[in-house]
Every structure is written in C-alpha cells, then in structure tokens.
Image 1 (cartoon, helix red, strand yellow):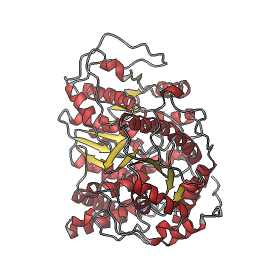
Image 2 (tube, one colour):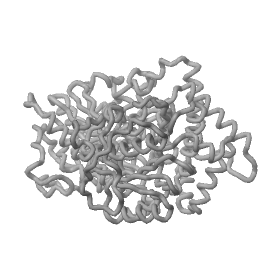
Image 3 (cartoon, helix red, strand yellow):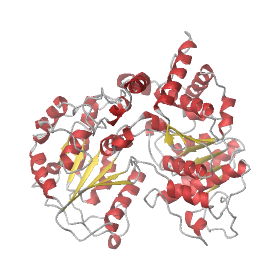
Length: 587
C-alpha cells in the first residue's frame, strides 16, 4: 500500500499543527493521570521494566511498511510461531490441556468472549481469557477469573518467558517474537501455570494465519459477525475475510456462527466441509427466551444480543463436551430461520447462564459514564457495520434518557481511526447524530508517552498520527451539510429519536466546529472545561485556546446544561480516554 504524502494544512490549521508539535505533556504524577503512583516503588519499577521491554518487540513504523511490501508465505509465519512455542518450553499438544474456546469474527468477538467467560465463571470454573487490544494496561490482555493478572504475576511470567527465549536463540532464527506473538505465548504459559479449567482465546487478526491458530484441539470454536476490516491483510471482500476466519475450524471440533450475509455464510460452510468441522448456526436470542423471562445483558446495545446468542451456544457446547449436567432443558420448538447450515440446539438458559450474561462487563464497548453535567458514551467501533451499531445505540440511549431540558445541551464527537480503515465512511455514518463539535486527536493520553509505557506505540510516528487527524477534520468538513437527507444506515424517518435541544452552532457550521488536539488529555480538557468531577488535570497550556473555535466553543461548553460526548472510531482512543476518566483502571 503506497504511503500517503503529507498534506499541507489548510488555512487556520497551521496554528493547530504548531500547537500539536510543541504542546507539553500534562504534569506526570497527577491523580488524574497516574494512580499507579500509589503502587509500592519496587513493584512499579519491575512492572514498568517488563512493559518497556515488551514494547521493544513492537515493529517500528518504517520496518512495518517494508514488511507489508515484502510479506512472505503466511503459513511460514504460523510455523515460526510453533517454533517460538517449542523454544519457550511447550509443545502444541500442551495447549490441549487448556480446554480452549477459540473465537474469531470482525465485529463482536471480544464481547462474545467476555459473555462466554462470565457464563462459565458463574459455573464455578476457573477461567483464563486472552484478548486484544488492551485499553489501559497491557495486563488486561491476560485475565484469570475475569480480572487482569496481578502485576507481580505479569512480571514473573514475562521475564521467565523472555529469558527462556534469549537462552534458546541461535543464528538460524529470530531471537524474539513480535509483540502480539510474545503475549500469546505468555498467555498460554500463564494459563497452564495457573491451572485454569478453560481458556477463552480471542483471535488477533483473521484466523487462518493468526498466531493463536497454533491451537490444534480446541473444545469449540465461534465466529461472530463478519464485515470489512484489515483489508490489506485479509482481503477486500467479506467472502475473502470469511475464508480467513474459517481457518480456525478444526476436524471434528464443533463450531458456531451467527446469521451472516449469504456470501460469507456460504464460504464458512465450504471451509467447514473441507476441514470436516461440524458448523452450526445460532438461533436468535428470542428463541432461547421463549417461554421464560427476557435475558438481561450486562452490555448495552441491540447488537449485543447476537453476541450473547453465540456465547450461550459456545458455553453450552463446552459444558456438554466436558460432561457437565446443568445444561438447560432442550426446547422442542425450532425457529424458522432460512439458512445454509444446521441450527444449533434451542435450550432454556440456566440460572448460571442468566447471571453470567447479566454480570458481564467489557469496558469500552457501549459504555456510559455519567460525570456531573458530562455524559461520556464510549464504544470502540472501527468498522462500518460496528459504527452503524454504535450510532443506533448512541441515539437510542439519548432518546431513552431524555429529560425536560433545563438549558442548552451540546453533543460532541471525539474521534480517531487508524490503519487502513476508511475514516470518511465512518464519519459519514456519524453525521446524523447532529454533533455541535467534532474533535480529533491521536490515541495518545499525553503528548509525551514516556511515563505511560502501557500505551506506547512504535508502529506509527507522531507526525503520521497528526496528519491522519487533520485528514479526519478535512473529511468531516466535506460531509454533506444537509441533516434532512436520507438516513443511510438507520430506521425509517418516523422512528428517529427526537433531537435534543442543541446549543447554538458556531458561525461556520462545519470546519469551524471541528478541532484537532495533539493528545487525548488536551481534547478532554477542552471538552470538559473543568466541569468533570473525576477528570481534574492541572491548568491547560495556553496553546489549547489558540484557535477561534476553541475560544468560542469553550463559552458554549461552560454554559451548557448537559454535554453528551461520543468517543468512538478506535479502541485505543477509548482506552486513552478511560485512563483519564476511570483512574481505577490504572491501579
């Protein structure tokens, strides 16, 4: 993929660019940014050393571009992962002891895993859960019984694995696996050492050639909703992507998927037949609710019902394969779902299943934080299909929580997207939300990441991040200004939520109502205007109000009765926001 040439900033953007390049970081150690300072110094130092060493395994930006141009046989990459596993002291057969549930998909695979893990934990089982990316701390990727592993456990297993790989290197192989591979290996070691009853493993990217696919004998596999993402790696059609996702199927291992478009569903079916994998279609959640109470989900959004339906089948199948008795009574009625696959069993969810679904927490996905006059809506949607679901959820929550206005209310979008994703398409889907301001910033909590090792990213430069944000602003300014046009993604016009009482727009409704900041902290300082009772950073730098829109918008935000902020486009952006708004996540 050709590298984009840097765009010369438009008039009015140059001051933003200078501010972004020269802004100083918010003072390190403030309660809003570094609650980890309360840790004992030695434990904090050991953990930071481990995370910083882990970060050296990230691929730097220039080398990453070279690798993309010269990508070799992906099957050899999988073989290399098996070699790393052997060098770490494990064989592929050792992973069979983990009783793995392997889950892939484009949209909702993380939420599906979270539901599944929580259901099985409610059965009294000791669970392991490997997921990506992390939001605030890298320890979140490896969980025991739903909680990120303890700092001392992370430190112990990191250095044990790192030294083992150092000791076994020779001239014929790369000494260290890359960042994600290392964490995958580490998760396997942690789960085996901690003697979990099962491990829920979320695929990183794709499936067939993902490094988690060295798993040979999972108990059950799952495929969540499919869509377009990571096209440079997986292909530019949903059918090509479905082929990659179906690569996790194993002979004789049951697999489940949700209702998909006809094309990709046919590909999954063909892949399953070729591999001799029994593949089933999940009935809708309504079929499992029939004759009983409605299932309450711990995660908001209508789209989570599909993820919950898949999770119930994965948990039910795992329990059945492991000889558990409390599986829920099978129902005789079968829903009429036109499909190319046999339908999975329809059963009455047990109390453990119900409590598991209700207790599920998965930060950064359809999450709402109420902080005084500010309401933060966080969802890491980053594909067109997930953004459609995010916007439906956002508008529905606004409508359900609408109260008689006590004054003007303001809607703010905080957005970023990364990689090869089409940000203009994502922003187009967000337009009907009628935001008063659009704010763009890189996925950096602070300008300087030296004190924030968990969120360091060497795969892209600061210049590239800022250029990308300015591109987002340009796309936003070019969007159709008519809010009365057809709603391309949503329900018919009569069922649209009534608009909130919006604050007056600035004089120039598009480019004048958008701003670029150099980091998340500066963006949040401008949006919150000191009115968020949790996020109370030191005084902002003078450059924060160097743009006319920033100055006029500050007055509007200070006088608003309520401020509704949707944070979306990137899970990494959501993580950086959560680090500041939920200090407990850094502890």
